[in-house]
Image (cartoon, rainbow, N blue to C red; front, side):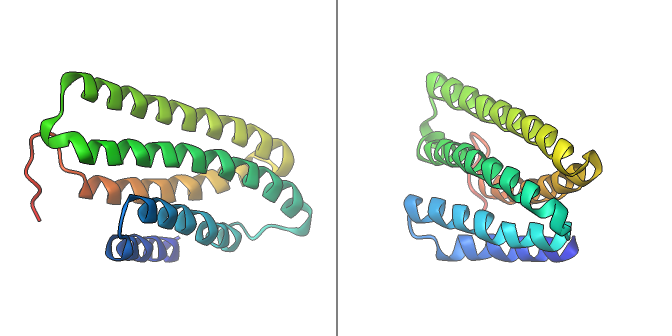
Length: 157
């Protein structure tokens, strides 16, 4: 799992250094957290041939929806970046409500996917996937959180 951490941190560093605009940033995050992630999951899960077909079908369905939710989250963050210096009450309410909705949608997706995976490859193996998934998600969220200024805070960099 430490290899995953090092890889993810390297990717995030590259993201910060290479992205030129909002579109490029979103595309880069999707690419990194999509394609590179699949290889990380392959290496971590070490699926048997019997597990593989069922797992990857469910995983691919999960990733499509997860990426859509991630795109919505990213767009909400970009909206915050454009507005945080002059944030109005209405805009703050809109962005927080959107963020809560994305989080709710993500949790619903995880529950649905865990249920499918548990039936297909056992609950323990499904939990193994979600352990890695949450580990990566927390790294990404932590790195993003470090870059987002608090409301009313002057960016320290």
